[in-house]
Image (cartoon, rainbow, N blue to C red):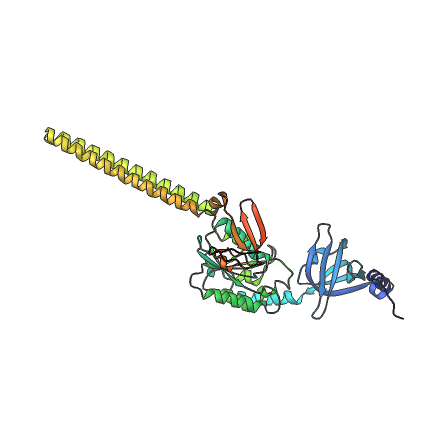
Length: 402
């Protein structure tokens, strides 16, 4: 007769069996640290792996050697095997950790780093300047990740007129390196790209490994336009970071440091225009004084007939009027330019009750209603927040309903 157990009963049974095995209750485990996470409570959660297997581990805050738990490190850990009952997972509970050589991935990283460094791929002398005011940029990342939306949100806030060309890319897994290389090369075929941002969120050493591959490093090095590398968190340093023209600590930081703030630009332009107007006033005032001095001298040293004085007076008035007209004309042009600059700020439009409409699936701005299908999820954003809605029916201007 078959034994029938609940999941909890089975977990408890296995836990009891393992706890009675002296061999599993006191052993040392050698492996490479992967996916390490340090909790606020002081516990270390990580995995140990070799070239064939992987096991989840934990070192509680009372344990020793937590400083050695860095992704890629080869360690020797002492502890026991047990079952984590809540998830039914086999887990190694370490009470002591010490270093034990260098992990395989870390060795590969150091080997490639030395090779590319000796070839000059990291030289500071070859790093290119990122354009201060870009018109169009390329973005190498996954269209389904949160990184894309973060970058779009920041750029839309800072510099909404910037055009972004997305090269949808695999950023994790076996074929990711080839996908990244292909995306970089495809963006380089566009002649009007100012620079490229390569971005991916945080992860383990294995998750970020495609950005440590040689073919990705050489694609960045061969790029015709500058490349910003924004991989993982601030503490993650990849080969791509070392080759790129600029390394950003996070994808969000890449969007911040690579684009100007339209508010700052408008303020700078306004200051420049005011300075130009001030200089014009000074120049006009100086020439006007020189003109009046010349007129006075002419009156003093020329025949002082009434007709002569009248002609000179008319000439003086005519010149002064022309100067004033010229100044007024320049002021109108400056005011017109300031108004145009003010219209560039999308906050002005949103403050009047308008919304920015985007498709949720790819965050593209909706400019053509024929591109919307029933069932699409839409995002309507303004200065106060955003509204998500699902399209049920579309009514076009011609009166046709879909």
